[in-house]
Length: 160
Image 1 (cartoon, rainbow, N blue to C red):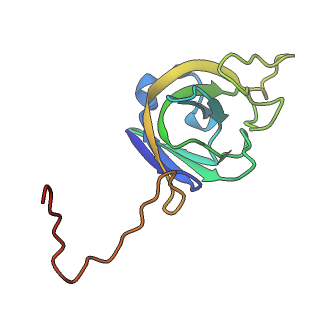
Image 2 (image 1 turned 45 degrees about the vertical axis):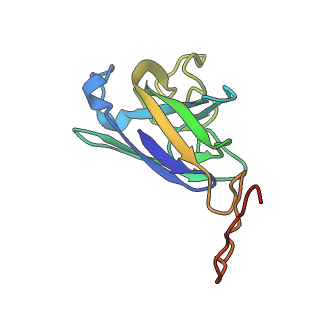
């Protein structure tokens, strides 16, 4: 399970190479589109990573926080706190990899046209799981104020 905090950047470490779909291109021609779905309100957010490093056993994906999210730059604003589902989709290019509108699919169903080697193609789902997004300290919906304990004994008498 991935754990993150609202209004902060976070890293994801997931297995993608074990389930890789397009093995005819180098890993440098692969990027991953992540779909985040909130369990409570069912809101959906898509995001390409700010950076990703594909290793033999895992892929490290980095996201940053921004009040104005951008699917193509890795700037996310996930809200509300709670449990989220994530789905990681493999996107591959035959030519130059460019993560921008018109060159990278915005959803798992997006087909870019006209077809070109410099436009990404969603190959399919490579992994999925759960993420817990905790509230940032001081921004919790319910906040408690701790009081100083009394110095003398504090008894409650009932029925007298």
